[in-house]
Length: 291
Length: 239
Image (cartoon, rainbow over all chains, first blue to last red; front, top):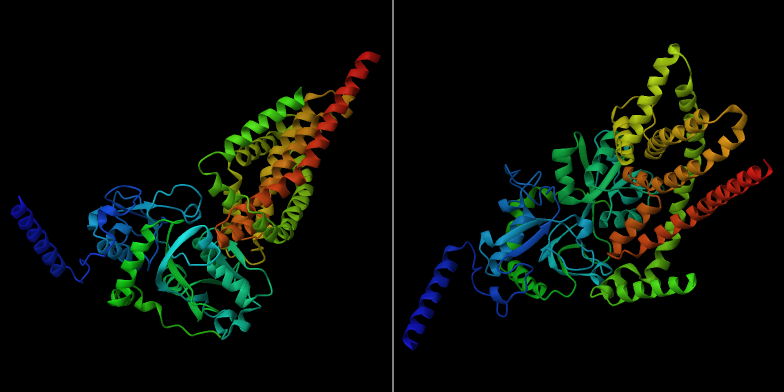
């Protein structure tokens, strides 16, 4: 009996080592105190991850899959920065790729009270102390700067500072820290227009109803590359005060956040986060800084 | 008796809510007094936009709806095309959800890039409300015009007033739909606050403002109805 037990243990250990060696990174080294079957999950044996539908680049990639409800990109492709981060976190917690399930969660319902239908939500949500009173945030998986997008040839394209932007009509998606940035740091003379979705803000920009939109820098690159013909990144802004950062969103007090944070810490320490950023967001770094 | 039963009913309701398993979460995220006080001033100032929108819209609706009602009441085969137009209009704008009318006008017309045509979201949002509510109000006028003998015009007017005021209460609430176009009115302002804090209390502040501005109109409508009833009873007794 005892011998059989040892044999099985050795076999298991050998399997674990081969699994570790075959993986791209040293991910298979288990995180102490975070064994897969000890995690508190909304659905046992599965890591359920929420994000908004449509799933936009460069956060998600791989395009639409036939028969899938996901628009623009299907998160299950593992492509795009946030999808790649989610799968990497899952891997470090001992989940196979097939054990990560995506659920579509509108941003506005991600923080409503009551039981959540996801283990964590990944959708470019910035940490703020007020928000952290109602949900639990993970550590940063991306440190983000805001940026302003205008149309080439229009006066706003020549702006070189925040002060230069003050006289323009700016638009922004509701619920974003981009809005906070406009109000607190750019302080335009007219109130910014606030839209339900980034798409609506982009439409208003194309229609000439506003002069510029403020979005995070990677999204700015996506907007100018894909959505707005003649769109141009006027510049990016550095965070005022503490560095703005994206965090995964958990139900308030969810103990899973502790284990996910350990996984993120390792991903940062061994260069995985950096590598994923280079892979998916590398185009999204070089833009003039507006002081 | 009515007072007692009301109090008992409310007490049971409150106990049920307060003892529900999720009450602590709901209390924190919906009934945060500090949040309420912080959000209210900005929401109140944004509410000025709602008030402006419905005051301006009501004037245009009263005029435009009357034109529609008159067109529809024109007699004879000669005016058939105009009558048909008025009918199609009423069907169309009562049928399309208001939110779609506002969306299509607010983002669609400026996209045409026609010179001289306004691109303002506030403008097109208000136009959308005028178009939709004129369809409803023209029906109120028409009922008044068609159903009553000329000798009873005064009665027709008073009959038409409560439904008219009802439509205006609807209009007041629907001004919040213009938020869709980027206009920061009371609802949008509260959404901004909610998203910044992940706390829903600012919605309550907005709801309260809409109720406060609706109640006077609702009571006025009740009063008109009651007055009419008294008058018609008096007339019957006199007759």
